Length: 164
Image (cartoon, rainbow, N blue to C red; front, side):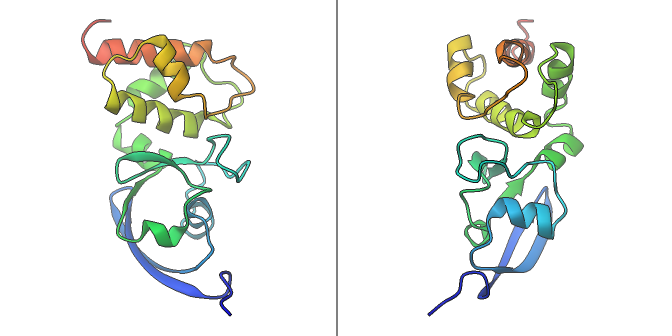
């Protein structure tokens, strides 16, 4: 019988543009691998059921819930966390808009929210407000009431299209 917490699997992937090789427990979730093994604590482990969005990271260009994906499933993948997206400047305009629009308060949801917003903006250059709300419906925020977040995303989408 296998024990998913004792059996180890070798993985090789790219995290924030850097090659990473590791030996991980078969049952380790991606979010735990990023936080515990790599020290990338920007994305949060919260509900651990894929509901809240706090653990959202980008895997092979798609926003995914790090609590629902095993680290072993990321073998060969390109993973970007909030740290990598921030350090690269890829989401600087979103971060600035969140600050300008007061779209963050406690900050707990912000990393996952920013990754989800970036994902939306790569799919739809200028989404309508209802599309923004729908796309972010899986990212919970207890502080802002969402309007400021929708405002921030809308302003960045328009600015990126030159329609600010």
